[in-house]
Image (cartoon, rainbow, N blue to C red; front, side, top):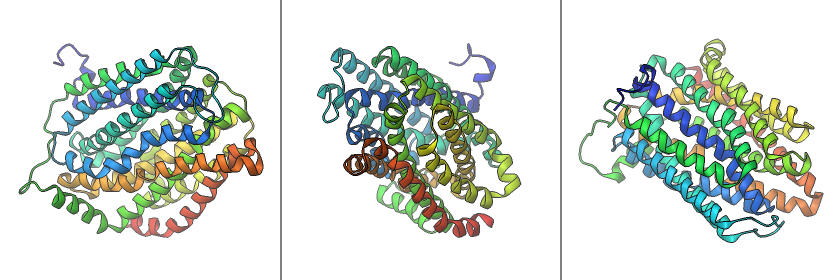
Length: 422
């Protein structure tokens, strides 16, 4: 199957990284497509947030089942099937938007087209559910492709490639496609995920964890949760990541409306702002292992978490696209260094046969908080409009997120130092 491919794509790790890069290019395109398409259907911040909630809610619903499935199934096959499912979901969304025709101006309350909005939400639900299983399988498959003493470097390489697609090229391309027609980014994503599935299909190796004893999903799930519960360090990393995700998602919904209404910037500029942030993330992915080696994992995690406080506050203060891009670059750099510590720590501490289940329980805490942040952001803007006016209300999620991360950092500082310092 891989005989006609360039040699660089024949190595299993290279194919794995290439497929991840391609799917993350699709994710980057979708970052703009979901939010901008929703804002073309309505100006209600809460209804826009519901599209993002549909994308993230599956993490709360399916994280634990995904862990059991990942520790039972061939992880390569699971990744392949989820990429195919996402390709079909994006194709269906493209078809629904094409059939909707020209849309009227988006109303402040309600939606311009109920069928188009419903199709967008449904597609987001399917894509989000597939992402839960795909990402869990991918993160547990990587230790089978690389030696444990190379996990930081492998993760850094993987995240850098992912960020090039997800946050550098993807948003810019997504903004360009949205500017031409709302249907285009969804059609392009259907092709991207389909091609990623073809690449994954050619990875050779054994990626099904060793089975031990009779299959009992309740007992298996309890074993994974029990491992996480017995590890204070993993629990600390999980809840800190969860609250960071909650506050970050608050800023994401505020940003798309702040850019359009307060700063008067078009979709193309919004995509470039996100792409500028990716430059910092790519640097963090490439330099993360070195930063951790110099600072030590405990100090690196502590200071990278704290860095979000001034970054979130600055989103409300900087006056234009250049300032927003610089702020996002710093934020992305810090986030990738944090991931270098937290993910490599998990991959080392958790036995392979438990990796899927423990990882899913961890990510239920870490990612399950996202819908809360999204809903809170929409409600903050909606309630703030009547009290401080819409322009100020659109920046309210930034201030709340900065204050929240400050509290989280203060509480988590010492547990991080104790746990990672060992």
